[in-house]
View 1 (cartoon, rainbow, N blue to C red):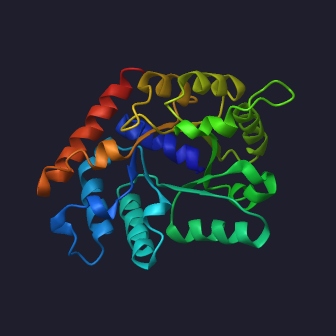
View 2: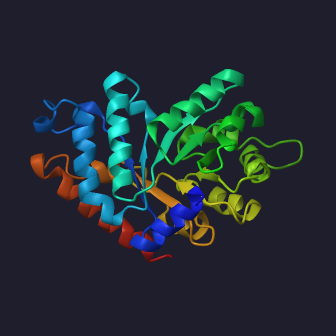
Length: 267
């Protein structure tokens, strides 16, 4: 099965399009877990146990794992989520040329992740090692959820289209193996709608509905293609119980359930 076939099966199984971002900021991990061999893995395991019934996917951000113990924690996390039948999207935003791009793609394979986010700024050849892995999902950054995304992504080309719409159109061309989606933020609902007009059939990974306060209705209305897509919340779920001590995971489960219900209103 392709990544998006597996994702569709997971969405159907749990009736949810929630992606839980696993970004275990070491400064925010509860005190009682900091003495564990791998505190980030100990934290993630409890989050997964509490949220997997509501999760269509997990999205660990590579920035929180880029050290020796971090990569160990990431591999344990991916394996554990996979054991719960939940796909994992590695939010790595990688791309480069030649051997470097191949090394990045091999690194994704080593983690066991099912999909990866990539940066299209350097063009198709920089994404080729990711795109060629037909079983791996590839989410191309298109219109991101951060305010500064407009600095480049909204620039108008000579054709009259903004850069983010050209990226969407190119991603559609890159989708030879049916493994390409787009990252489009819920904090820019008008752009989300315009990207959907450009690419009716590509699934979106939509960040920004949690702590960033993005538009949940627009995320669902425009983020799903044939019912397939993901709406992500990271801090809004995993740190929902930051003030609850050892009960933090239960609060995360409650937050994931609330988001699931909120999104399902619009499906």
